[in-house]
Image (cartoon, rainbow, N blue to C red; front, side):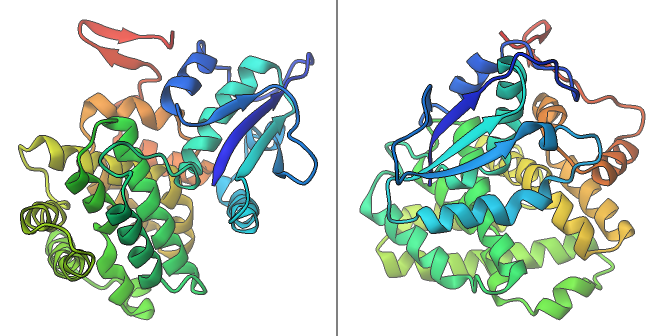
Length: 322
């Protein structure tokens, strides 16, 4: 798990996107469980060094860092956690890059709240892990997406209840029972029906797991309802949060890999479907997600003339980071 962040600034001017005003404050607000340190950790600590100049390069695809960062986390498992050491830019630019990097790898932070800090939730996580064959790249990505969606839920709703967090973990669990070849081809003509069937099967599988770990019946019913309906927009606050967390995770973590696996037409269709599940109030976050150039271009094509707001909305308009 990522436990610490070290920013080693340089006074040299750096190329790349303009730094986000107030990025340091936003970094602390968005990732409150992460400790920012000012000196390198002691000898023997697990540290992954990342040069933000590479991250900020115009043609960079964040997918290319995944095995390096996720692999370092696996090696650090069982120890005192992993430290991300970012360097190669002035402090404000480092903080801007850190926001994007941590957004991609937030599944390794494992943030919890009172509802998920329990042995029962530990059991849910263990069962989720056991369902995924991590030797298969697609299943490995599915597992990472599940953890990432969970972390997005907590970023959007820090007080999220147990059912919502469990639904985030298991919303795509049906994929663990899918045939890899069929998934790559994805021949469904009626995309919504395909998505609904996926959600229905996932709810049934999640219910089996939740029964096994001893979750209360009313909680199981709540989780199953959320999973069963998570591919549709419904006038329900929790379902909207789950949809948004799932959608943001697609763009922040999955989009590059999806584009590498599926055709351009399939990727465009998935983007269109996913964007429709993201309420306008949260679309500002897309501008702060590092996307591969080809993915960014396709997203802009899907969105058409509607620009991505780079600022956080608030009543009465938009405000800059503060």
